Length: 128
Image (tube, rainbow, N blue to C red):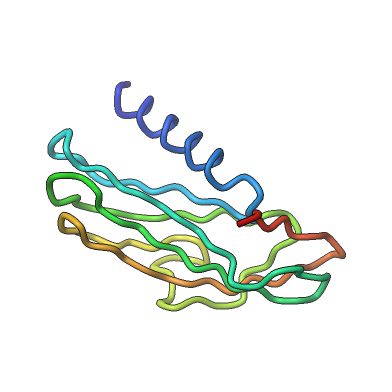
């Protein structure tokens, strides 16, 4: 039960951090100690995306804790008007899941995802 509460809290925190960004994600790690902490950031590299246009998001997952994090994974969730085009590196499963594995203390895993704005919707890119 405690583990579920932590995951829900992390999910809600990520939503708050990423409001204004067209898509959002969750980050998980198997915690062998309470000193494994992950920081997740998403930065859109394009601005003013119009219908049919593509944008690239650069993501970073950093271990900011005092110990190694094991079984780190990221799941992205795309907005209704967004379609996955490609990414670097490629996802582990489907177009939304990256299994990172271990992250040493201070280590960062970077990846980028290209999204296409479809159905005439507008992507909401955060100010910054």
